[in-house]
Length: 269
Length: 259
Ligand SMILES: Nc1ncnc2c1ncn2[C@@H]1O[C@H](COP(=O)(O)OP(=O)(O)OP(=O)(O)O)[C@@H](O)[C@H]1O
Ligand SMILES: [Mg+2]
View 1 (cartoon, rainbow over the protein chains, first blue to last red):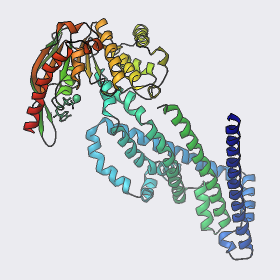
View 2: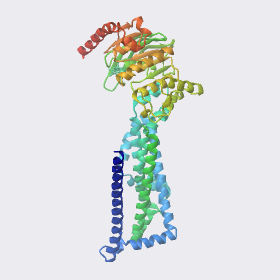
View 3: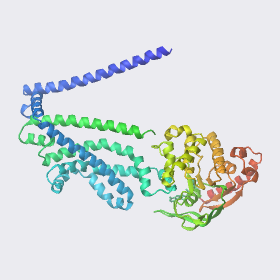
View 4: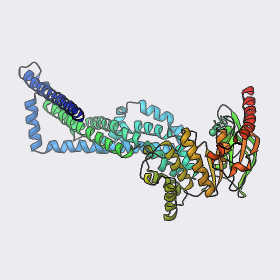
């Protein structure tokens, strides 16, 4: 009986593995086809090679840029701007949420401003930010942070307010101060919410940084795109897009696993 | 000794001012165990919160050992209907939190708390998280958390009502003997008349709108030193139950007539 169940289980695992292999090979074939047809259609002029370039040329360009080290410089500039903007947005949003929680009066006063800021397309503020912070890296980081800070503030502040009154009551009966309430009940109860904003914020930070680089940068992947566009070098645009796609995906996946680790640590409940 | 004199509490909200309780006069002797019973909304929780110092009465005086209560102190412990253990802390850390906030955290109090934890049969659960415990265990852990700072007055707001019947009976005995042994003063709020009779020395029956004390019952002397379960099985239990029940019905009827 037992062996029968075991064979059933191993069969089940085998079909699952087979299934997974099939999915992955289809994904790879699709990717290959995509690049292959891109190359082919460009060569036979179905796609305008001037605009869409072709993988082989993009690849040559990328190899050259990797070799002379410029790609690495541009990519690392953009990447660090994104990471800093993302961290500032998340931490700043959480900090503002804490201040709002601390002072109900302030939160009432600021409420309409937050609503306006949240509904506003924040990239429209780009020129103002550049004027305020100067045409450089600071502005770009500010753009990255700005996009996520408002939504983080709203989401986290809401979570702070929705913490069960009874957890506060438990601490209050021991004579807890407001600071202790925040430290021991409010903040830890909201860790899951804060962590879940990370994933959203990393995407927003990319948007902010690339737009920022469009506007002012002398370096970075956004700069490569806009420069390539202006001088009609579409290989460079395509190459930058591919690099951004890879980096953004890797970063998203890293945040996702970080989220999983953190959640596991705090979600024994 | 705890005493309340002419205590009133009015809740102010945007829509109305609710007179939650009015003219509450009562005293509780040291070491005494009393119960509050009465229809829902008659102000039992309000009175407990006032005694805990969570907010101040609109008028009247609340004295504990001849000192006016103006805020929460480590002298009172409060236990809620549900355990409200912090899910992200282990049982031990949950218990220590009360000590930290009352500024009583040291090796001695920590050790005493762990001893109490094992007295209540939870020594192997110190490093477990609340979600890994049953409802009864969690309520016991919450009891230890409340008792760790060694309060002299305990306020219990329906602490057994979320438990199944068997667990509730066992826990009643356990809480009763633990509190008697440490000679604590206790006020229990409950919807269960049998529980009030089984556990307490006196029963305060509240009526509502506004909440006030309607009658006070002395529980027969022969019940006082017995464990709650023994009291429930006492041949005279039913007689006393009937007496209080009649009054309770009167209050409930009066309540439904006016609303
Ligand atoms: N924070 C509050 N704001 C306004 N009104 C309140 C508040 N808390 C309680 N009340 C009102 O005061 C009255 C007494 O409430 P309380 O919670 O003390 O009753 P209770 O006897 O504990 O009821 P239950 O048995 O249902 O727990 C009720 O009419 C309730 O609506
Ligand atoms: Mg109540």
